[in-house]
Length: 604
Image 1: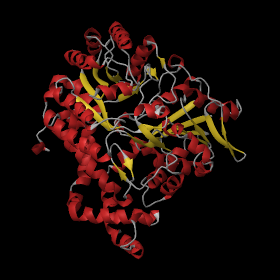
Image 2 (image 1 turned 45 degrees about the vertical axis):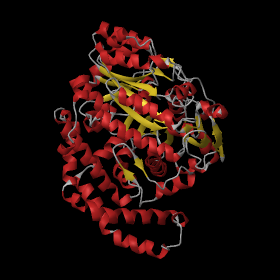
Image 3 (image 1 turned 90 degrees about the vertical axis):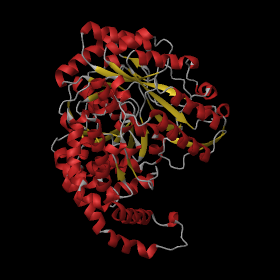
Image 4 (image 1 turned 180 degrees about the vertical axis):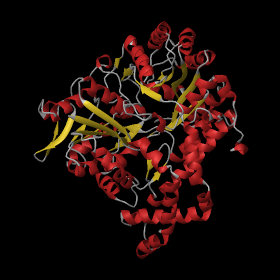
């Protein structure tokens, strides 16, 4: 029996996603013939083609007058936009966008399409990638090219790090509309072009990995096509639908349209069990973590204890074309642990559906050696929720003992046991960057977050990390319940006054995930009301709380942008945009060079 695992668009096309290589590794370890196809990276390479971009833009412009004729009978000055049918809403927005584009940007059609192919080459080049202004210009050109390629499908829009439509809501009705709407779905034609290649694999089991909201429309479009064009068992896995499985259960038509089954939570054990079922070895009710439709009813199988990392086979990248990725080196996502060893932060649900366990350092370093020998990979991104100080110390010792030449980065908590000595050992073993959960400059907010760290020691740890040669990337967020503008400004002040040890940061706004811990004790966090999601497939809740209003929050976000722009003064990292790119620059040039490099915007 052959298994084919597919990774659909949209995901940032810098490196392979972890899901498929991990699952392929388990299937192959059990003797199954399994293949993987990263359709995301294939898609980006195909649409960033001069002819595709030119044809897309010209088609949109040429059809705009016809679009006006279609929407004209519906337009009434007294009518609210939301009262129009959804297809008319899309067409109104599309007409306005294309008209605006012609007025302001049509001149770009003469240069951007041809420059796009050269820009993709630059991102992949081991020489030109490391020329900062050259790289930044290339990324900006690709942004413009993707906007052009998206014009016929607007308001759906493709970029290097997102696929979105502002009119799309996470409801079953909207999912069905946008999957089948040729006017907004850029993926239908692409899938038609590769359908024969997929079918030629003769797979009896096809798995599709959907991990984010940006993959819902492209992933389900693919699922529907394959469900109608093949006899294979179509299974959907990945992180997203496990978070909203209640919505799937309440919409049994989901299985009629898109798949034969859905796998939720950790998939390494059930993906093999599903293969066992399809090959006739076991009954379907023995496949753990599986949801499917039987006799008109949705059935949810038992959730079994997941495999431990030490029980798993090594990831498989057989058949992957590394030359397609938009970076000069493959940066492989990798796991040394699953779940979170702290697991008590009130705001977080990133470890939902995961059971904490750690991979033995001996096994992990042996896998580094094997992956380097087999695929030439020596750059790794740990996708653990958090790597502990003790694990880093043991890992660094083992890397030194085995003389492994690698570079890596990971997420970590600001634990006081991240001593200067431990961080120095990490740097000598190939650690280049740590993504720290700094979160907030307000003590009261940090207490409510329940981070479980010594708040007063955070800057000392960052200083030790900096002194060890490591790049400090800080996660911060605004809008946590009870946070005031005064609290938020403490965060901004902390960033700006410590930019010598907080080398870069990532900013977000708090959202309440359906599986966060604070929703169980809302009063404790100043939450006055929690509302069931209007969009049943949304992984978040809306809520009312004590704290900043939306207008106050927007003001703080603007203040943060302005204050940090002045404090950091056009740093290279802001223009590199992706942490993987920062990491590669650190591996080549080192922390001091990267932190000292300032961008002259006049040269871009």
